[in-house]
Image 1 (spheres, helix red, strand yellow):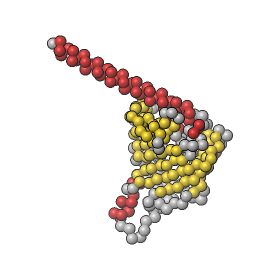
Image 2 (cartoon, helix red, strand yellow):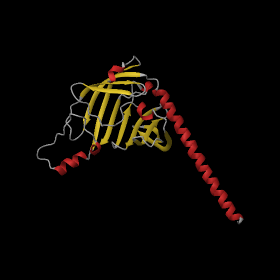
Image 3 (cartoon, rainbow, N blue to C red):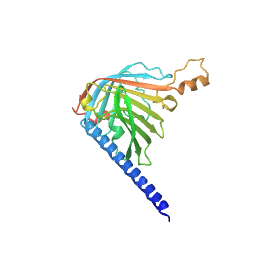
Image 4 (cartoon, rainbow, N blue to C red):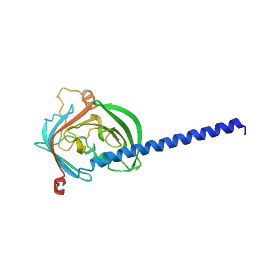
Length: 237
């Protein structure tokens, strides 16, 4: 083997090792950031939140309604809507950020930076290591300064892709959002039991299908949280 070929092989091996070390370092940095976010979220053992829910889905007529949301560690969650059924994407994230990063069965990778609502965020991609997981990929936009998830995009096997944007104000110290906006593709929307489509009589099937292939949106605005005062398990039955 010539000295030149030997040198080239050594150079390729060195570059490969540097690349692997860089990948490992990046993954470790992102896991460290995720763990810091977890610590902040873990301050909240339970809460009861009051607010309003607004549904913006072309083929569903649902008025703005008052809601009460219950949460208890590690993953108990319930939303009650006054005077009707709560319209949320089936299989979507349960409005609890804990559910996004509760498991440690994933690899966290850096994917650059982005500005969300004027705030600089780190983009972190979570790749599940469990082949049976319904989640294919989650992309988090993390405000590193305040350790808040400003945006999350989750792709699942069964229920399509959901995007969640979160705004914070009064409850920033607990990492609890004042406002949450869910966005999803209506073609993947699974209607809750008892909810019917409401189209005009003169609409054609092709028009209906076009409407169902639009973006849907659910907006929740919280007016108050009662934090760490205890929530009975019977609430979630």
